[in-house]
Image (tube, rainbow, N blue to C red; front, side):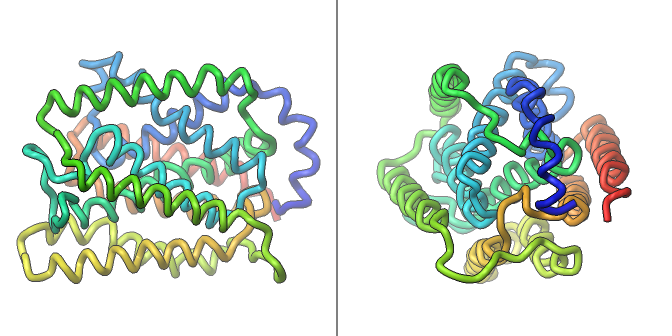
Length: 323
């Protein structure tokens, strides 16, 4: 299915409510960012259901805004990637302060009050896993849901205040837990945010010449192999070999730039072949199943495997008849 295939679903897309699409985005993004990585366990969801609901709203509303902006302004995949990096800073650096060196949180190479290695790592993770893969899966299984903008003005009047309240709650909770960031690292992260916002705006402008390529199955392995290494190797090495922390961090930085250059080769999500999106997202799920296995509990492992298999097989069924 290519761009021309999308014309016949325009009339159908209006039948889907924004709340249903937001819920799907919330479930997918929460599953990928929390369950697959082991950041949240299935037992934790059972013990703290209110936190789970807040987490769904936190992920769902923000990724839904990115999806809405992407459809509304026909954003290219490279721009969506930058928005994912911005999302990573907002979540990890502004709301829960994991990017800053604090009394309770210090990861890998640190400098200027920042967890440098972790900052680069988690920005990429959220950009590729939480944002891009979520939208890819949704596009594969329910293509019409991303065909048009999904949020109205009224939706934004509800979504934005809820996001602000959740951010306030997360900040207060993080500070109460001992993660109190310094002024310098927060300033540096805000500066980085502004630079990325400018980059996203600049990258959203129409290209002067040339035509964006479509994501093809043969092109995926050029990005997924280094991405898999970047997601898994840092946790294997950790701080065990201190002399490797600097080259490891530089390698992650280069990978982040490489991913931007890679995604910038393509147009919008709705212009891409769904078979290729299925292959890409399926490999991402497998990578995260392997990479997050060290951090997941046994029940979380079972849920991660079952849900991933369902998404992969259901996605295959949805695209198997497309030529």
